[in-house]
Image (cartoon, rainbow, N blue to C red; front, top):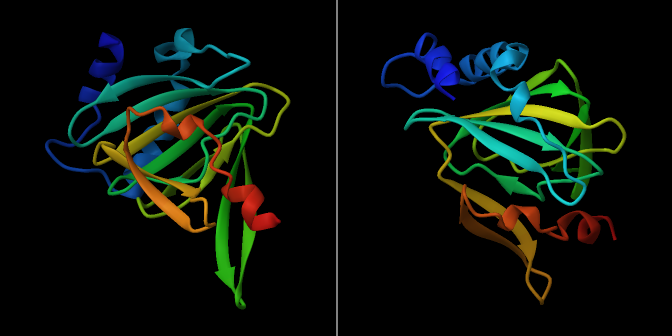
Length: 182
C-alpha cells in the first residue's frame, strides 16, 4: 500500500476536500493505474470483496469487486461526495426519481472505462447485473464516515438508518426495490 500512498501524495491538494470534477479525474487516473491495485482483486460468490486503498480526513478510496448480481442496497453517503470508476465489467446504478406525482426507477448501466460522480445526498443502489465480474474504484471526499441505509419498518414506512462506513449492514438487501415496484 506504500505505492498507493506515494501515488496519492503526488496528486492531492494540501489540506482540502476534493470537488466532484477532481474526484472523477482522480478515480479515472487511479483506475487506469492497474499495477497499483490489480493484485488486490478477488471475487467471491457470496459477497462483494472490498479493500480500502487510501484514507485521510479529506479522501477515502476503495476497490470493490462484484459478481453474481451482488448489490449495495439503497444508500446515500451523508456528507461525502463521490466518484466511481468502473475498471472491469459492468455495474448498474439504480435511483428512484419523483415526477408527475409518482416514483419511477431509473437504471443507468455503468460500463468498463466509465466514471460518474454524485453529491452525498444522492440515494442510489449499485449492483452487478450478472455476467463478467466487475471491479470499481470509489473515491469519497471528505472521507466517508457515515452512510444512510434505506429500509422499510414493519408498518411499511421508509426509514433511513445512519451507519458507519465500516458497518457491513449495507450488505443486507433493503427490500426498497421490490416494495416500490410492487
